[in-house]
Image (tube, rainbow, N blue to C red; front, side, top):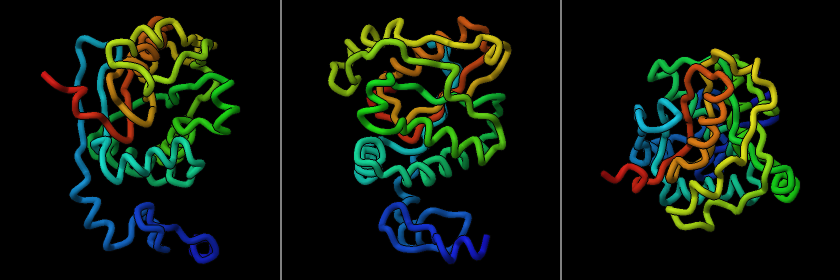
Length: 218
């Protein structure tokens, strides 16, 4: 591991400076900055199909810019850092689960972008917990419009009936960690959770990098 870190050192996900400590993804200066950005949200849900939301940052400022780079500009290396902080929060809150599933994107969008950022997050969280990540159980069967292009009130209808579970036996009786990048209205994760619950999942915990504060108004 020491030799690996010398050849392929980590870089601070904020400023890009090389770092050699294996338990962090920020340099010393940026670690102090990150403390002020850390704004975790852990919520129980009674009127949704998912049971709990765990999110690390507000979707604003530098974090927003980094997520957009991760999601659209092929900065896939940022996924390791984001997954590290999601994993840290999950462990700190003693949140347990049996299986990790990323929110899927349609295959056409996958080939346009070249990757699914939620899969990258989920696979890195899987390594942290040594819990299996399944990327082919929950599928998106319709190529709906991008949620970010829609008004908040239209997002729920946009994802309605767009997901399916391919192998029911894999989710039956399981507590699922459903991984996505941003929690805005919860429409996407709620629809995915509905399908998972309809196919026998015991409970669903949603884990995201960030959340939009207006999601919790009222």
